[in-house]
Length: 441
Ligand code: GUN
Ligand code: FE
Image (cartoon, rainbow, N blue to C red; front, side):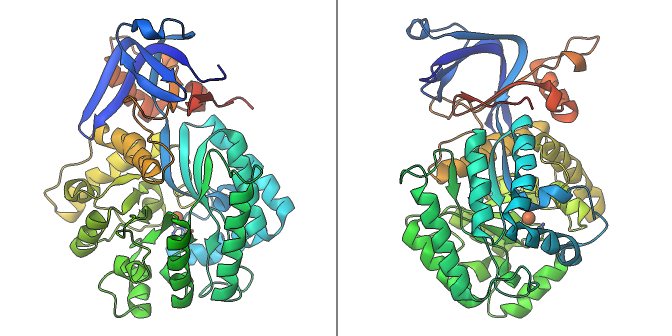
């Protein structure tokens, strides 16, 4: 299977658009050179020579995309969940992240993370590392080895954070960032990583001086890099940003001043986590600039941040996907994020008195597959999250026999049960870009 030409047969489900789920029982999905050549009820003659893998009776769905997570926070997931954002950062996140100066510690922690990610249902991720270049490169090496497809970032922070973590100055942070980028580009004798790419990662406005942000804007243009950060997550944080940037019309505009909020030609892909309190002006700016929203419902609940206006993102044309935000979120699985997204959306109407429809299964599944997968396409890393011809062949094979029912279930019903009930043990096989990911161990 070296040239990644093969066929899988099974019960296939994927999103056509946010409202439409496609389902084909007993169908064939063709992988040609690591990309989907389409789903067929009858196998076209031209693929007759491809090897066939029989997954009859199993569900075959696109791999899931996690648009926002923190690698160094994985170690303390499920701890310290009784704090709000700014205290949680001071008390939990910053002291833990400071430990990644020690490469031995990073090796242990990131090794556990890589094993966990291989076993889970996500095939793509956009992830924060820490300020430390050696540990960030180690994380990227492990992600590359895993076969998953990822964008990972060395974090920039030069203010409002403890001495043990804060970078010495804007100039030092920028020089370190260029060193990290050089090291990324020279991996594999100068050809760079295959499935892993760097993404600029200013932590959030409060952690980054104007000088640092200006320099990152220049690096973005120089290297045509994508950007990830946090936006409008928590009310106290937003008030702080207002004090720090009184001239900016919105939190998003505070990034935009430095060319870190998309929009230029060539358009820079940007993903902003949370956007819980984004108002109409910010939403309009995001839609106009093609800035992605990474909706992180579990984190927004754990840290009492609020419920993001995902329905508005969909209506306004803001590109959106789902994020685990480990460790604001305790669970890395984007199946879990789909359930959380549906559940919190059901609270907006009764709690906020809004006449707003909750998210459907179809919409949540779309966000966690094709919605998030579109960010990778924007970054030149192949489209994922769908089986349309030309998409990268990222697929999960789910054995749902032990969550069967004594009555007949449609494929759509089996998918819904999988989203709500499945765990690692239900993943019978997992592929990214047509390569099988080792899920055991
Ligand atoms: N804002 C700045 N840093 C962080 C972080 O690590 N997690 C979350 N949820 N929000 C942030
Ligand atoms: Fe985060």
